[in-house]
Every structure is written in C-alpha cells, then in structure tokens.
Image 1 (cartoon, helix red, strand yellow):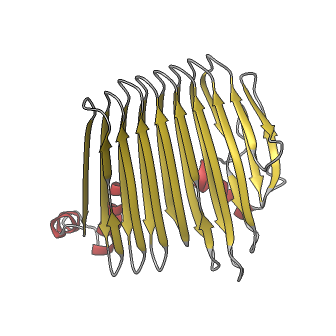
Image 2 (cartoon, one colour):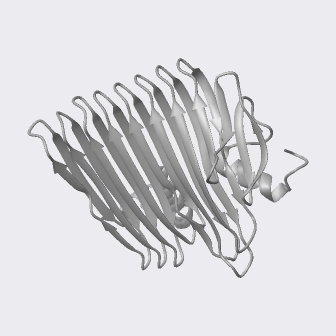
Length: 307
C-alpha cells in the first residue's frame, strides 16, 4: 500500500480509519472506484459482488476479537462512486468493523461517494461498527451513506457514525430491525460549517420482545450551515427505546431536530428528547481562567462535545 498510494491518500486513510500502514487480518481498500488491495483471513472472507458494485463480507460463526477494515478514498473530481457492501455476521461472533470515506477534491466538478451497507447480525453476536466521513479541498464533496441493520435474537450492535468535517452535503439514511433481546446503540456525530448541509434520517423498528435501542445524536453547526435530524423509533413489542438529540449552534447556522417515537405495543417504553443551543458563556470563562484564549476554549468544548 505504501507504494500504491500518495502521501495525501495515506493521510486520508489515517483520518478515516486510523491506518498508518498495511493493516493485519481482513481488509479491503478502495480508491476512486477501484480496488487497491484486499485480504481475507481464516474467519473473514471478502469477495466481490456479482451484478452490482461492492463486496460481501462473511464472518464465520464464533469469530472472536477480529477487526476488518473497508475504507474508501476519493481523489478524482467528477467521480460518483456507488458501492453496495453486505456483511453476513455469524452467530456468537465478537468483531469490530472499521469503515469510512475520505474525499480530497480540488476540481470544479463534485466528487461523490454513496455507500450502501447492509448488516445481518447473527444470534448472540456482538458487532462494533465505526464509520468516519471526511472531506477536504476546494471542490464539492458529497457523501450519502445508507446503513441497514438486521439483528437476530440476542445480537448486540454498537454503531458510531461520525462526520469529522469538510463534507459539502450529506443525506444519511439509517434503518434497523431488532429481533428478541437484541440491543442497538446508535451514535451519530456531525460537524458542518460554511454553507454545508446535512440531513439524517433514522428508522429503528423494535419487533422482538426484550429488544432495545439507544439513539444518541450530537452535532455542531457553524457559520451558515444547515442540519436536519429525523430519528424515529417504533416499538412493536415489549421493548425499550431512547432517542437523544443534542446540538450546538454557532453563527447563522440552522438546526432542526424532529425526534419521533411510535408505540404499537402497550409494553413498549419509548422516550425522546432534544436540545439545541449555543455554547454556555460560563464554560468559556472557566477555560479562560486556565489560560486558554476564547477561541481555544470554544474548540476545546466542541472537541469534548463531539468525542
């Protein structure tokens, strides 16, 4: 990989996947719609899809303490990259999946990546999924991720979906269906600035008794950027759901949060809350007394909020 990629491309991989060289185990690295390199492991098989662009990732039942990397980088102006990646996670697994996309675009035409990821989580499996999006350059950078999650009985999934910054526009669709005793923790963190726009739509269906979900949305909107959040949890069984949306607004930015809950069972317990506001002045003053400038204090607060 060191010979294949430029320093700028390696920097993108570091931003979105924490990679500083060739990863161990299973991985699939793509650049500008083409495969850079791929490896499978004894328990994780990565193969090219037939009929549509993308890959299938099959994780054998009982796989423990393994990580698979599937980052994408885009550096070509005018490229619209679309992939369909499907994860088949066997029963009783404990695995970590690192994904994400970094775009560097200095051209006049937009660079775009649409990643459609579908997860089939086997019974009693545990999955940690980390996805980071990042953009840089003077050209438009568009990222439209779709995440579909199907969880069998007793499965546990923790998803951390983060937009680090630099994304001109994004529409993010997340859909999940939970079977009996399945548990989902869905955390989304977004940063927008300038005239950037972000729309996040979530739909979580609790179909099995004992299923539960916690949705945590944290965002910072700066300058003239616009953000819209539409998280919806539907309780169709004896289940529990909690939706929390928190946003910091700065400058002339606009944030709309519309958390929703629907109960289709008398045994569903669902809660939602939302808070939007500016940084509290006393927080800045407290950090200034420790020697930070006002700008440094603001950045420290924002970093803590999004981490």
